[in-house]
Image 1 (cartoon, rainbow over the protein chains, first blue to last red):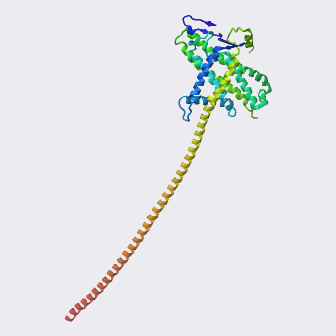
Image 2: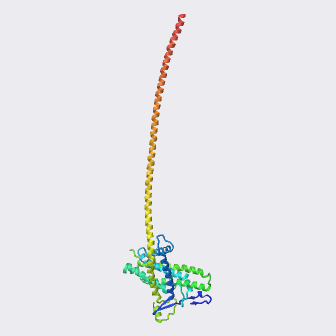
Image 3: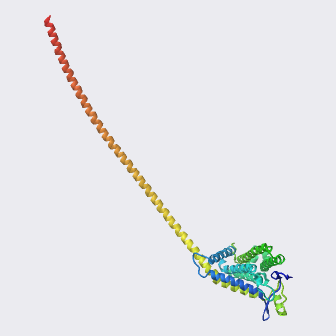
Length: 242
Length: 156
C-alpha cells in the first residue's frame, strides 16, 4: 500500500517497504536500527544525565528517574511477587522504557525530515522483528525464571490444577509471545497508519486528536507489554502452597 | 525464522509487513545489551539511592516515634508530680486553716471563761454590797423606828 501525494511529500505513506542492509548473506532492516539507536541514545543520555550526581534530596532529572524506578519496581513487585522481583526488575524496566521511548519517539520525532533511500524511519516497535524479538526474550525469561527457581518442578505448573490443563498450557507457551508481539506491533503500526492517512487527507488540525490518542495508546502498550511480561515471569516463579 | 532463511537464500528481499529476518536476533541482542546497560546505569544506582532514602526515612520515623514516646512519658511523669504537689499544698492549706481555727476557738474560749469569771465576781460583789447596804438600811430603819417609837411613846 503506497499512498502518494505530489503536493504533500511529508504525508507520503509507505508500508512494508524496508531499507535493507546486507551483511554477508543476512538482511537487516536498516530503518529500524537507525531509529532504535536514536531512541536508545536518548534513553541512555537521560539516564546518564539524571544519575550523574544523585542526592538524598532529589532535584531535576533525578526526580523523574526515581519516579520511573519506583513505578517499575511497584509494577514488577505486584506481578512477580516479593521474593523474585528483584532479579527481573532490570529486564521488565528495560522492556517498559525501551518500548515507551520507541513508541513516543516514533510519534514525536519528525522522522520525515530524514531521507533514507528506501522505506521510512518510524517507531522501531512498528516493525514485527522488534516486537517478536522482545516477545521471544520474554518467553525465554519466564522459562529461565521458572527452571532456575524451581528446577524440573517448574513443569508441575503444566498439570495444575488438573492434568486436563496440559494441552492448554502448552498452547499458551506459543500464544503468549504471539499475542505479545502482535498486540504491540499492530497497535503501533495502526497508530502510525491512522495518523499518516489523516495527515495525508487533511494535513491540519484533524490528525491532532488521532496523534494524542496515539500517544495514549503508545504509553498503554508499553505498560501492557511490561505488565504481561512480569506477569508471565511471576506465574513461572509462583510457588503453590499446598 | 524460516522466511528469513529463505529470503537470505534468495538474495533479493521484497519486503512486506511480516518480513522476519536477521533484524530479529540482532534486535534481541540489542535489547539484552540495553538491559545490562540500564541495569548498570539506571536501575542499580537509582535503586540504591531510593532504598537508602527509604531506610533513612524508616529509621528517622522510628527514632522520632521513640522520642515522642519518651516525651509523652516525661510529660505524664511531670503531670503526676504536679498533681502530687497540688495535693500536698492543698493538705497544707487545710491543716493551716484547721490550726488557725483551733487557736481562735481556744482563745475565744479562754476569753469567754475569763469574762464569765469577772462577770461572776462583779455580780457577787454587787450582791454582797447590796446585802450590806440592805443590812445597813434595815439596821438604820430599825434604829429610826425605835427612835420614832421612843419619841412617840414617852410623850403619851
